[in-house]
Image (tube, rainbow, N blue to C red; front, side, top):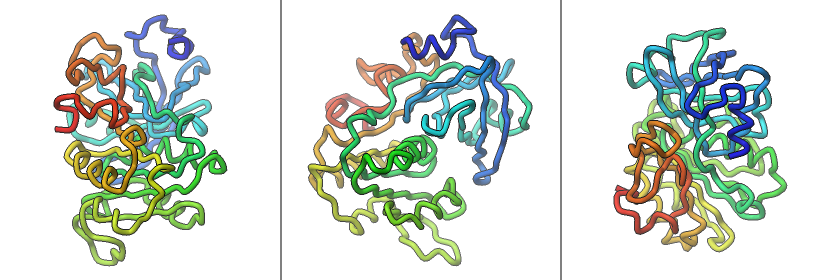
Length: 284
């Protein structure tokens, strides 16, 4: 809570958005833009990989959006990947550098990076799931000597829908990262795998007891990926996921994000499989 109070001290309320300025906008795909955001008064976000913020436009609405920049690279600003899917995000996509947004947060529990150090890391992203996972990837790469193997599996509908394509190219060139890509619908020139993300498991061999896996993507992908992770022997407590379930208030008051007895916005959005294995609706 101290970290949250430090972040929002100027507004003195976790319910009151801070006026934040867009400092840069870049187009990632036809539907996704990347926004660089700067908070007022020199406030730093001080987030953890896997956390989210509530983003608002006055008179339009508010929505939770995962933070896509890593804490190690978020000094006086942070980044959000926004998909254009509704009224609020359509308005956000019309904004330019210099325009203002409302920001509350960061909220939720991120990935326990301290528990990942010293392990091999297997990262599985599907579609827009690469946006929050990028925060963790960059954090790991900035502390590369603290980890064993780093394996990234990324699946998307088509090559044009892959996020951060320039960064994927850079990761692919690194000698200390193993990058495996797949698409459902290939286009001319695509020379990588074709198929769902679980197709990529045949390309890798891991030491399961020393491997932590993080899975972020559409809910439909989770049961299949988790099944394969369990089959190769990764312990349930070493499988981590991110759930974004209709998080409305961000502070456990509205109940929209409940998974049985858990409030996703507080107990998550990062959960280990061991924590939610028996939670009804978690993997549906």
